[in-house]
Amino acid sequence: MATTSEIRNGLCIEFNNDLFIIVEFQHVKPGKGNAFVRTKMKSLKSGRTLENTFPAGAKIEIARVERRQYQYLYAENGGYNFMNAETFEQVFIEAAIINAPQFLKEGQVCEIMFHADTETPLSCELPPFVVMEITYSETGMKGDTATRTLKPATVESGATVYVPLFVGTGEKIKIDTRTGEYSERVK
Image 1 (spheres, rainbow, N blue to C red):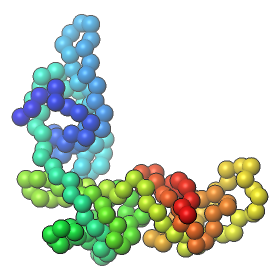
Image 2 (cartoon, rainbow, N blue to C red):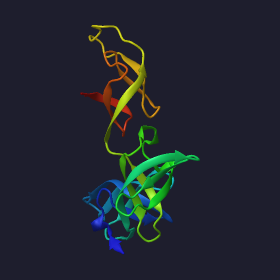
Image 3 (tube, rainbow, N blue to C red):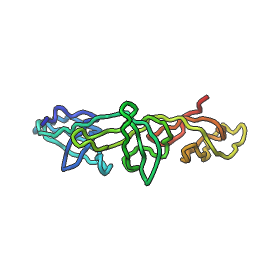
Image 4 (tube, rainbow, N blue to C red):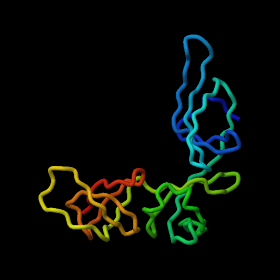
């Protein structure tokens, strides 16, 4: 058991028979009354966000989690198979707990968070940026750079990303996996 003084961003706690990650927190000491901690938490099981206020000094249950590097192998039956590069152990992850499954490609290294007590996977995060090749895109008009006009492009994983008009088929681009948006061209 811990107290609210140990709350920080990224801390995983057990609350209402669910696992939550602290997204934001704020210690508040009003001029009148007792101090409290206002938190914004995200459920690891359902993905919903919850705001809660804990009184200062309240007991919280910290969940032990481990983050491990796994390599993406292939997709099957609505899920994805990953392998630990050190132990060659394979694990099956459902698409619902992956932050951007449309940008997975073979051999890519991802970080999977496991509950240390039960060894169950809680979430899978891709790197913040991935480099992918455009397999199909319409041709854009040459010299049209005055406006920020975007066109759809299909990348090697099959996902559609909106790119500027000057980016064409066969080029490599950097994609932000948190938003799914085009970031820049890669040489």
